[in-house]
Image (cartoon, rainbow over all chains, first blue to last red; front, side, top):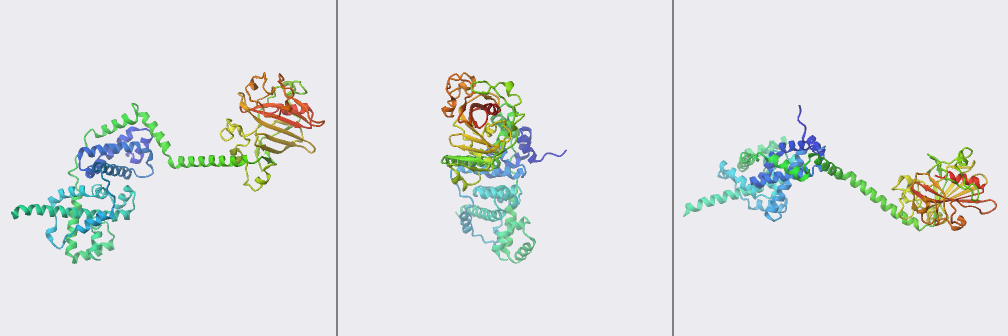
Length: 200
Length: 353
């Protein structure tokens, strides 16, 4: 027997079938939690966000167009919920997709790629990436999470975030540049920390 | 392709999302550029690190149960079925495109009606000409129309009154409008079809009465079910004092029927006619609660205890019969004037519905 599609389950939920919604929760809990965890880097908070997302999905199910895909819709809700939570946490509203962010980071990036020693240490990079992600603006973070954690194409990201594919490409490039800048800065700081005790 | 162009495409190149011809150009550049090769290596390493998922902890085992419990508690009460009702209601409410559109249309229509009605109030009257009627005439209930002065028109006499006469059909279409006070204005005005007139509230019911638009049963004014042979509806006139005048003509003569809505409402079946009983001393239970009639006093004779319609000989050739008609729960005063014998007018009166 073929399992019902997500859209069918969404329709069933609208008809009052809570079992259908339960199945949707089963299917998407990992996706929602992963996005939330990568965005917030905090397990309990990510789970709280995931719960909030599913409740929002249930509340807003009547807004879902069952002729469209369910996955981008729930992922969008997840991203928006995470961004809202991050902004509340910081109590500072960051300007999304502000060109000055990327531009500023590009200016500070002064990597000489001719130098082979610039290449990362693989083990260090794993930790650095996590920290760097958290230092990215929320919108860039969301793009990178969707792209590399959810393995979504630019078109899928565009569908999820409700922007054009070209827009995604431009912003993804900026996000990557920002990420690189942060990584290089972290690397530089670590090098300086390591060198200071040796010089004494 | 220079380093800057390659840099922009590098992360796409790592994911094999670059078009083939661009891919060749990038590879040609990479062969000769050490910096871009290092950049490529770093980008690949970053991609690899970004795709790592091992560090993501699992959700708690009872996560799904918690979510469902929360939903059931907050949104469906104790019953799971209530969720369906709420969702269906929300679904209904959320048909924003259709509902908002419908709401907008209704609002626009109401606004139009208000504006049109207020503009029509400045006109003294208007006449609906060349009206044709069609449709169901329904049962005729004659409840004692005066055959002659003071004489009750009994049911037995009333039976078969339509046999020799003309069955009048309901109005189905108004083809044009003109009126003594409004002819000039309306001649240049847009065409008022019957539907539009209906939406404009013609006949102009008194305040508090349901309008024809919100009560489909009241779309038509009371009309006779019987007319003598040869008579047909020539025109309908409406005026802003809520009086509708229907003129039926044959070759030589005409019958004028004036219909005025009264203030009160009556219970009873549609099409029921009953007798007017003076201005305020009615003994008829159906008329007792009605407001004072809009029919001029002189057509009522002495009023008082008279429970029968007053029949007056206005001139040697014309006679007026006055009565009240309960039409779909509303009471109308009806005057029938024509150059006919009183009993013929009584038959017309008795056929009102």
